[in-house]
Length: 148
Image 1: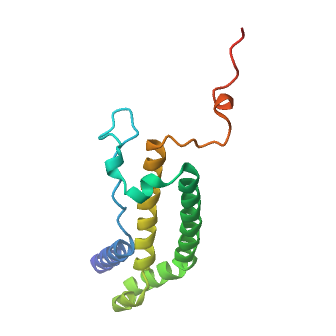
Image 2 (image 1 turned 180 degrees about the horizontal axis):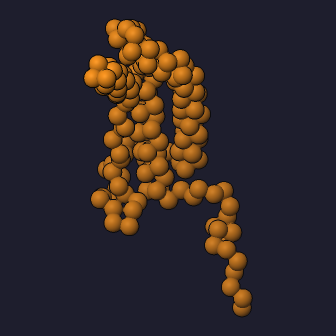
Image 3 (image 1 turned 30 degrees about the horizontal axis):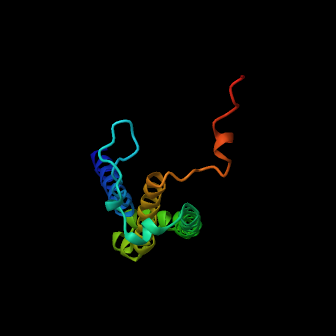
Protein backbone atom coordinates (compact mmCIF):
# COMPACT_ATOMS: atom_id res chain seq x y z
CA UNK A 1 0.00 0.00 0.00
CA UNK A 2 2.78 2.46 0.93
CA UNK A 3 4.75 1.52 -2.20
CA UNK A 4 1.70 2.14 -4.40
CA UNK A 5 1.11 5.51 -2.73
CA UNK A 6 4.73 6.55 -3.28
CA UNK A 7 4.52 5.50 -6.94
CA UNK A 8 1.35 7.55 -7.44
CA UNK A 9 3.01 10.54 -5.78
CA UNK A 10 6.04 10.27 -8.04
CA UNK A 11 3.87 9.97 -11.14
CA UNK A 12 1.84 13.01 -10.06
CA UNK A 13 4.98 15.09 -9.47
CA UNK A 14 6.47 14.06 -12.83
CA UNK A 15 3.20 14.84 -14.61
CA UNK A 16 3.03 18.29 -12.99
CA UNK A 17 6.61 19.04 -13.95
CA UNK A 18 5.94 17.92 -17.50
CA UNK A 19 2.89 20.15 -17.79
CA UNK A 20 4.74 23.09 -16.27
CA UNK A 21 7.52 22.68 -18.82
CA UNK A 22 5.00 22.92 -21.66
CA UNK A 23 3.27 26.02 -20.34
CA UNK A 24 4.34 29.51 -21.25
CA UNK A 25 3.86 32.63 -19.26
CA UNK A 26 1.44 35.22 -20.49
CA UNK A 27 2.90 38.29 -22.14
CA UNK A 28 2.96 41.49 -20.12
CA UNK A 29 -0.25 43.48 -20.20
CA UNK A 30 -0.11 46.83 -21.93
CA UNK A 31 -0.54 49.99 -19.90
CA UNK A 32 -4.14 50.74 -18.95
CA UNK A 33 -5.34 53.72 -20.98
CA UNK A 34 -9.00 52.88 -21.48
CA UNK A 35 -10.57 52.01 -18.12
CA UNK A 36 -12.63 54.31 -15.92
CA UNK A 37 -9.54 55.12 -13.82
CA UNK A 38 -6.68 54.66 -16.30
CA UNK A 39 -3.08 54.30 -15.14
CA UNK A 40 -1.91 56.77 -17.76
CA UNK A 41 -3.15 59.03 -20.53
CA UNK A 42 -2.34 58.34 -24.15
CA UNK A 43 -0.12 60.86 -25.85
CA UNK A 44 1.80 61.10 -29.10
CA UNK A 45 5.00 60.43 -27.13
CA UNK A 46 3.83 56.80 -26.71
CA UNK A 47 4.17 56.12 -30.46
CA UNK A 48 6.78 56.15 -33.21
CA UNK A 49 6.57 58.90 -35.81
CA UNK A 50 5.78 56.31 -38.50
CA UNK A 51 2.82 55.07 -36.45
CA UNK A 52 1.56 58.62 -35.90
CA UNK A 53 1.55 59.24 -39.67
CA UNK A 54 -0.70 56.20 -40.28
CA UNK A 55 -4.32 56.85 -41.18
CA UNK A 56 -7.18 55.02 -39.50
CA UNK A 57 -7.58 52.91 -42.64
CA UNK A 58 -3.91 51.93 -42.57
CA UNK A 59 -4.17 51.05 -38.88
CA UNK A 60 -7.22 48.88 -39.56
CA UNK A 61 -5.48 47.17 -42.49
CA UNK A 62 -2.39 46.40 -40.40
CA UNK A 63 -4.56 45.02 -37.58
CA UNK A 64 -6.41 42.79 -40.06
CA UNK A 65 -3.13 41.50 -41.51
CA UNK A 66 -1.72 40.75 -38.07
CA UNK A 67 -4.93 38.98 -37.06
CA UNK A 68 -4.72 36.79 -40.18
CA UNK A 69 -1.06 35.88 -39.55
CA UNK A 70 -1.84 35.32 -35.86
CA UNK A 71 -4.55 32.82 -36.76
CA UNK A 72 -2.29 30.92 -39.16
CA UNK A 73 0.52 30.73 -36.61
CA UNK A 74 -1.83 29.68 -33.82
CA UNK A 75 -3.22 26.87 -35.99
CA UNK A 76 0.33 25.68 -36.71
CA UNK A 77 1.04 25.51 -32.98
CA UNK A 78 -2.19 23.74 -32.08
CA UNK A 79 -1.98 21.28 -34.99
CA UNK A 80 0.56 19.12 -33.15
CA UNK A 81 -0.54 19.87 -29.58
CA UNK A 82 -2.25 16.52 -28.96
CA UNK A 83 0.75 14.50 -30.15
CA UNK A 84 3.13 16.62 -28.09
CA UNK A 85 0.97 16.33 -24.97
CA UNK A 86 0.82 12.56 -25.38
CA UNK A 87 4.59 12.42 -25.81
CA UNK A 88 4.98 14.62 -22.73
CA UNK A 89 2.80 12.37 -20.59
CA UNK A 90 4.57 9.23 -21.78
CA UNK A 91 8.00 10.72 -21.26
CA UNK A 92 7.00 11.77 -17.77
CA UNK A 93 5.96 8.27 -16.86
CA UNK A 94 8.18 6.00 -18.94
CA UNK A 95 11.32 7.85 -19.94
CA UNK A 96 11.76 11.44 -18.66
CA UNK A 97 14.76 12.35 -20.90
CA UNK A 98 12.48 11.93 -23.93
CA UNK A 99 10.82 15.21 -22.90
CA UNK A 100 13.89 17.01 -24.23
CA UNK A 101 12.95 15.94 -27.76
CA UNK A 102 9.52 17.58 -27.68
CA UNK A 103 9.25 20.68 -29.86
CA UNK A 104 7.80 23.39 -27.63
CA UNK A 105 7.55 25.85 -30.55
CA UNK A 106 9.16 28.63 -28.51
CA UNK A 107 9.92 30.78 -31.57
CA UNK A 108 6.32 30.62 -32.77
CA UNK A 109 4.99 31.43 -29.31
CA UNK A 110 7.38 34.39 -29.02
CA UNK A 111 6.13 35.61 -32.42
CA UNK A 112 2.53 35.40 -31.15
CA UNK A 113 3.53 37.56 -28.17
CA UNK A 114 5.12 40.11 -30.54
CA UNK A 115 1.98 40.18 -32.68
CA UNK A 116 -0.22 40.68 -29.63
CA UNK A 117 1.97 43.54 -28.42
CA UNK A 118 1.68 45.19 -31.85
CA UNK A 119 -2.10 44.73 -31.84
CA UNK A 120 -2.24 46.37 -28.41
CA UNK A 121 -0.15 49.28 -29.71
CA UNK A 122 -2.38 49.67 -32.77
CA UNK A 123 -5.48 49.58 -30.57
CA UNK A 124 -4.06 52.37 -28.42
CA UNK A 125 -3.15 54.33 -31.56
CA UNK A 126 -6.74 53.91 -32.80
CA UNK A 127 -8.01 55.37 -29.52
CA UNK A 128 -5.57 58.28 -29.72
CA UNK A 129 -6.66 59.06 -33.27
CA UNK A 130 -10.32 58.38 -32.35
CA UNK A 131 -10.73 55.95 -35.24
CA UNK A 132 -14.24 54.59 -35.52
CA UNK A 133 -14.81 50.84 -35.32
CA UNK A 134 -17.82 50.97 -37.59
CA UNK A 135 -17.88 52.19 -41.19
CA UNK A 136 -21.32 53.75 -40.55
CA UNK A 137 -21.64 57.52 -40.74
CA UNK A 138 -21.49 59.33 -37.42
CA UNK A 139 -25.21 60.18 -37.54
CA UNK A 140 -26.12 56.49 -37.90
CA UNK A 141 -24.06 55.62 -34.83
CA UNK A 142 -25.93 58.06 -32.63
CA UNK A 143 -29.23 56.28 -33.12
CA UNK A 144 -32.52 57.75 -34.24
CA UNK A 145 -32.83 61.51 -34.16
CA UNK A 146 -35.10 62.95 -31.48
CA UNK A 147 -38.67 63.79 -32.43
CA UNK A 148 -39.03 67.49 -33.17
